[in-house]
Image (cartoon, rainbow, N blue to C red; front, side, top):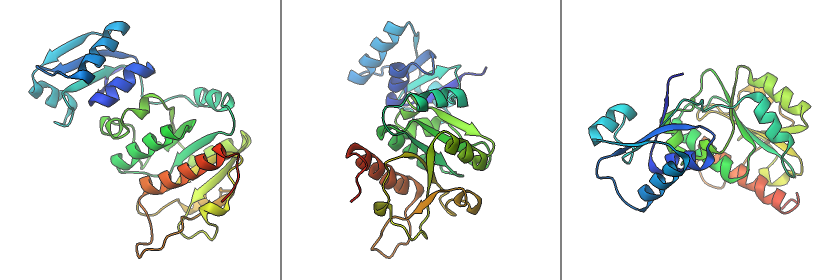
Length: 251
């Protein structure tokens, strides 16, 4: 398997801490120093992962970008989890589970931000379609601040069928839709939630909206009629988390 590359201080540190992706080696830019670098080298030494030094220009070529902060990590493991591993995590979850389903998110920054928010909210997994959507690239890993290393990411061929599978596992499917009459704050999230966030331009596709048990909108007062996918997802995820921490009570 071809090695995957992770770049940036935080993504490599999180990969070292999580251990899910099995780093094979780390390359640092020559004369790269500082507290985070010392921590990174210590963790690598404890795990027996070799650390090499190369000129910054070499890191630029390997990463395909100059925005690597002088740190590259290489792993032969896939960024993706299996459906079986994901189900095991869901079934062993304490309390109500949350799964984030992303429909045709194409912008790597939005995808990375959504994964970062999902991990901070204790989401059990993120589900992506294989086609017409961004995958887990080094840019996405960096945008997630390394959250990819801690959160199962599953790619599926058919999101509609996957929503049906989630329902069989006891999930209620909630779609974010700016046209929905029900406000986000009018729904009680005292249940296992499969949250569907749609693409930046078109939102959740009609076929998937029909599969949702509920659709909710975010109340807004300004003249702009919608939020981008990453911000909308963050608003809804933190409301779900707030309610579940409070015992499922509504506003």
